[in-house]
Length: 310
Length: 268
Image 1 (spheres, each protein chain N blue to C red):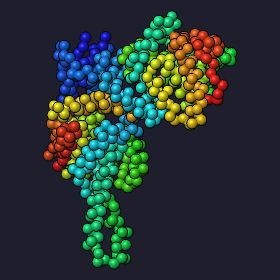
Image 2: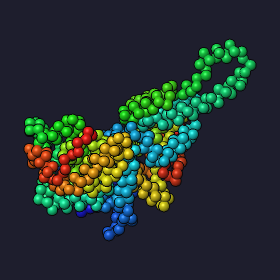
Image 3: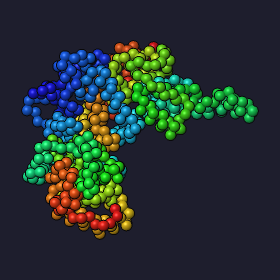
Image 4: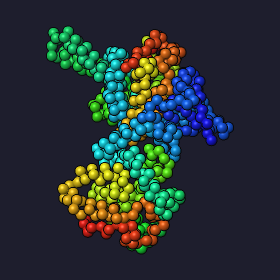
């Protein structure tokens, strides 16, 4: 009889048999053991399972985000982009960017900054003739994005598809590129990007250390690393309420809205398995980033970690 | 024998141990409302253990979703499972106390395309249960394999009972002579509500008609529902019939044996 795992009273395992332990018992090569929520699986299994989770939830991803967080995730993402404070001409790499939330916010932000820039520029050019103003348009100095670009990179084809359709639907055309890629092994050259963001994605990466190393590699010197992720709540009362909501309500929402209990069970379990703020900060420093800091949002339900490549 | 999950030291993901406290011996759960009714271990393949609070939320959520989007058949199924805690044991007892029903509970037959010999059933004479059942499946383009397996029933035998109920649903259509349009489904739901007492059937019977036109509602109220109620009350339990051993039996004869009155002559 395989060992039955007991977890904390309010939480539970998805299945009673840890696949890794079973394999070890049979004497087969198990590979390094990892977490998938509260289960123990091999690295390869974990990657496959996570791929399947996001394949299943892709179409309802945005609806579920809104219902689970009561729309607050939009505020978190806004805060991330405000913290980034990009200026026109920035090249952003948004990893695990799937449905494009950060990318669209980046474009909106840069567009409005650019608007203000152009307005100021026009004020100074009020003494030019109509002809000269028209000619300056031809020179494309008035590009609405100021040559900013965002590359959305995701490992999951379905999520990228949803993102592309959303972009079309919302009318985002320029400045966006969609690339299929793995955060642990990015298909980009060294020293390319000004900013690297990963919003609610690093939790699903199998080897966080590799992802952080890749982030360091593709950033230009002076580039910034920003990570938005669920983290740990230290306040005990809030932590209990949060646990109650996470484990009792979220899988039910997953079943009712998306018809998929297990993916959302995985979601809440994976949040509990993720390293807390200080530990993630240490890992980011290990990858070579300087001036690493974090900011808790909503008492630690979410945290933004930031670091610089110098 | 229970073991606590071993902390995995994994530098790739940080040396963070999952902070799951060891349960002390004899520690009682914090709140009965949020604890698993039968513990947290699955009792059958596909089982998802849920706490009473989760069941309540699921029942409410699935009811709303099923009304909002009638094509979410999975929501109807979930509603049936989460509200059937009183009706399912009754059904199971009815089956246990009947010789044929008892055999079904022991042998656990399943109605699916892999277990049915479709060629043989099609070769049966017209009017026999097997032939009419296959005709029903073809005419309405349905398959017995689309029934959802139970997930939230916290008893392995009751899970089978509800599975059997779902698989026998198409046979109900055949016995009652009702197609799978909205009107036909509502009539079958009335019949099943009387027969099984499942709250999901009662809700389906009560709320299903809201999406029907006035003309259909009239037919429903004057002819079909009274007939369905009379048949439901008069008939013996439909889950106590080993349908797989009665494919050759004529439908008329089975109706008489069960006590289902002949369907009214209206176009459904």
